[in-house]
Image (cartoon, rainbow over all chains, first blue to last red; front, side, top):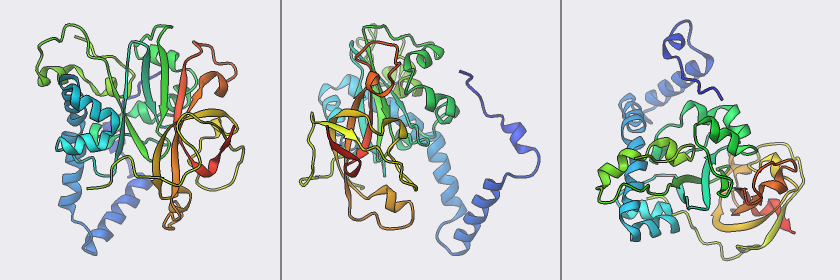
Length: 202
Length: 103
């Protein structure tokens, strides 16, 4: 699978695309009507890019370090996050647990549903037709292309987030992390490990 | 604060562990039931609660009456007859009650 990177320089050249003109026009109308301000839109984008992507690693590090929280996270992801001070807004969260027998991986085949309040904006490959089409029918081959080889005796559970729930993988805590604090643990819990296309490595 | 993942759904047709079949239908319009599981059998993994019907919401209606949403687990071999990997591999997704029938 080609992991296409968006080429922002190329996109900046030439006239704006139709959807850019449309979203700009809608924003200007909403500003004129006093529904929202440009500052609110900018702040929101900053949250998505700077704040939200760090939340997932922190939540999972906390779950690794705290068995009672882990249990609550698996029982009701949104309630556990709320109790820990993290408002996931509209996202209803289901955490799916990797075990020595089960590996979980997340996709949205219908569009690009993603736990944005926990992981920020989805990466380009997550939105690609290639990933969405193939990971549901040949997950092992797709994971291999990410460098993740799941042994034959481990079942793969694909989660198609096709409706109202959002998903995050709770990976297994690797050996060699004994005594680590939550900040150290969070450093190996990357976005891709929370979508299930990679495994945390020490 | 928006409600938790598990809104109560006391009046529902199915419970966790029961076998179901996704209806074979191709109605026009906005549907959240992926075509690749229509007609396939699976098992209720959990009850998610009652949610506004996305098939109505998509056209600006209020989504009432709310529909019970389930997570259904399908074995990959039941979804893709040519699936070539260990038999326990599965795929799970959310299906609204009106798309399910007992299997």
